[in-house]
Image 1: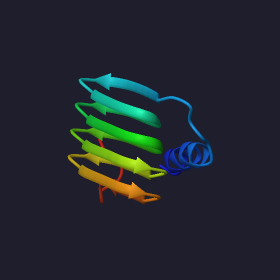
Image 2: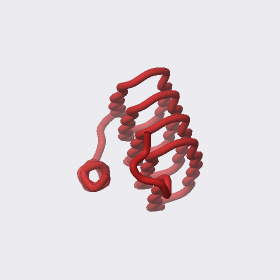
Image 3: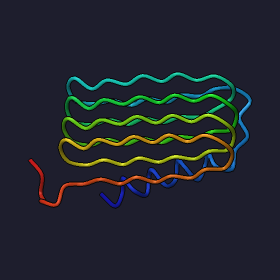
Image 4: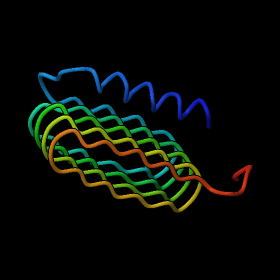
Length: 124
């Protein structure tokens, strides 16, 4: 868990200081039945990592220098991130089962961090 949070923080700190000349989307998935959709217009960065089964994620970005990082580890998690404007930063981390998150940023310089995990450990 600590490694995952550190990885997400590293991705977000890297992209927060960068100026993008184009859209960049990185997606890593392992497991079964995971789904992801990214739509970008302008010059933005997004990263989505999913491990487990039946996780779903949407990222929509319109504008410039927006950055989004989403990591889902577990089962049946869902997330939606939309950013419109400039220099918005969003990070979502979900571990466990059945979490849902929605982040909507409009304007300039908004920052959001969402972390959801199960209260029971270890998780099956």
